[in-house]
Image (tube, rainbow, N blue to C red; front, side):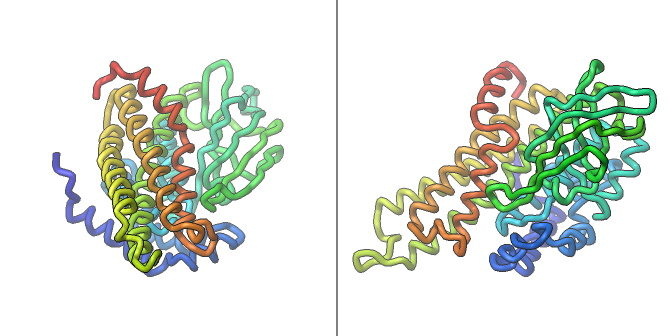
Length: 365
């Protein structure tokens, strides 16, 4: 199988890399961490101007002719700079849920607004949220936790259950009865918990048909898992080479650390895990194209397990080889470990995906 990028994909990769190197240095990122929104709206506008928000979408879906490979390219490069903008939550997860569930008329309104950078959306999955159908719409009660991109979202796509099944609703975060608690995830990105108490919405707030949203949510979650895997590969690779450069200069017992055989073996193990993770990322991206949901889920889970554990290993080894400096806020390698720790547990832990893979072991590869 040919894993080489097309000229267009290579140009996209170079574009994202140059932006991150020029505009997203570590000190610039630290400044954004303390800003009111936790990211820069100017950067988001640049993402839209450069076409990145629609790069992973086919033209008929309102994008620029790309797919999961383009999304992988963007997220991997962004993870090298630990970008804080809500690209994954909005341009990947929310968009995939909309494409899979919304009516054509709803897609024609929502997707262009997101691709143009005019609207930020986030998927809020509330397993215990209930929707009561009324004559003039719906009343929602429940909660959803750890919503990536929630604090900056102009639109929340909230899942809720009633007798018809699971549905998705478009909800304004400022709706009466909706309470939002914003906080930092371990890697610095902003997330939200929301509580809905008798939140009233009209019938037009329903995304697609009532009770049919479960497959769309599952698809969006699989895209989220592979997006996280792409982030992990970018973070692992950067942590690996930061560690290589550090042990080439740090001296102990009169010689640099890279001359010690035991540490050379550790670096070799880190490199092997990083390259294995990259291979599994390609497998996971390919799985997203599967028409059989079981085959898709099996491929996604295999990638999430391998990459989640590999990332945690590489990040942990990077911290150990750096020593105490790796734990300080002022040094970058610890922040990569935090991102890799989040990747390991978000959108399904290793145990969850192992169980899912085992349950699907008879599915096509």
